[in-house]
Length: 393
Image 1 (cartoon, rainbow, N blue to C red):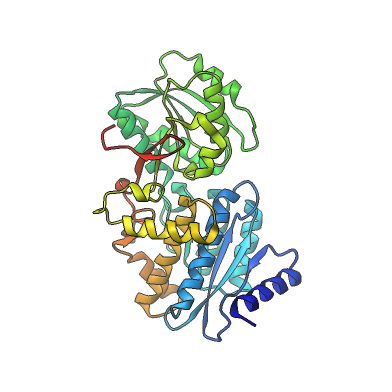
Image 2: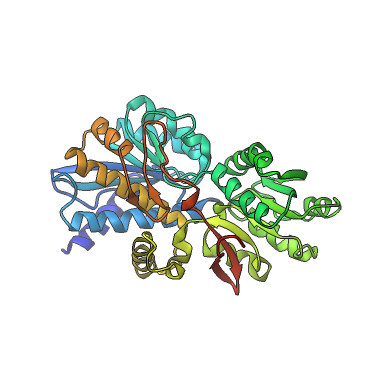
């Protein structure tokens, strides 16, 4: 029996034995000398566009790491649960990872809601948790065992407002999702707007299951003086907003989205209406368009080629967050020459100059993200694809 077929049979056996567990993969490594790393992801459900590429990324790169000899003398045993985007399930699985699976570290948490439900579990157990969620509240205030890889919603607001300022736009409207990420980003944008001389003169919201935002956008359209519209949100909502925006003939007013829609699926869902939309995102989406001297170019191009060849789907920044989280964790274990949870935590916090898909990461006791605004690129949809905006445009 080949290693691959043996792994498949194990996965099938696990699925049969645990029909209600949500466990999607257990162990790609069977050696006695293993280190267990856990993950709880939204592989199915409304946030699957986040969780699915994260899941595929973790699987493919754990296999690569194990094939190269593992970490700190041990093979990685990966335990992944699918929370379906449900925060209560996420917390249950987090507890299971600690109490039953005895993981020494965790990379996961596709959404802000599921992440925040799991934070107390890992903090109390003193097990390092690198989240893949967007909101700043994951790492602010700093908690000893909690880290994250994606740019924050506050940074997204700052990058958007920086661009608005360059274009001399001072009066905007916001239409925000009421989900955890949308609500958090809306609050951050309201907070930082005055710093950039931006006035929010109209505001609307929509729920995660809403399928038409025409009424809210019609109200915004009726407010005089709106120079641009900002849409904090993720999932299908922003694509619906973008389509309704075009249907109402609002396309002459610039529309900004967040990094919460930084995948090709947003462009596919929004269709031609996405043309001209701007958003801040990681370099990963425009890796091939980066100058050769860019320190991130090799990392993002290699990840994109590996992911697309293996997963047979376009790369997204979300899988990239999982790549960054896994390798920050693995490099911390290598530096510690240990898989002890507390030693690994200490080394994660000492991460310096890590070149990832999201940027160049340097963490500290007061910064458990380690990215600054330069890690964000401002993109615009042109010809049905992402283009990199030159600085100052």
